[in-house]
Length: 109
Image 1 (cartoon, rainbow, N blue to C red):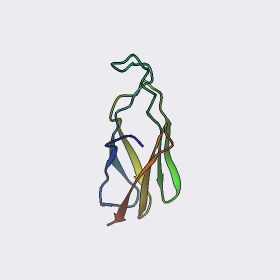
Image 2: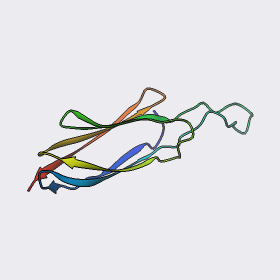
Image 3: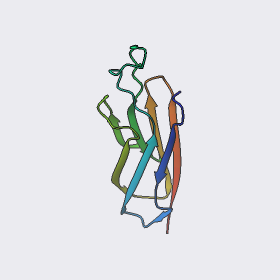
């Protein structure tokens, strides 16, 4: 597990059924490409978030494969239609096998 990894998600707490809302996510992660060397000349192992998945009430909304060129602390912003009250789950997958999850509920009102 990479040090200091912290997912952050901004989701509206309420929406009307059928509304399109903006979702913002950021995960603090150093994102090492595996191409740099440390001060001793050793290659620093690759450590990136290689996949990002968002589901709403168990239905997939986004599934993104990431490559070493992705920036440190990857940020995603997207719009999603909210058909009903439910829970949006966010999952980030790390090269080292770590999985980082965050969940936010959206009420209909």
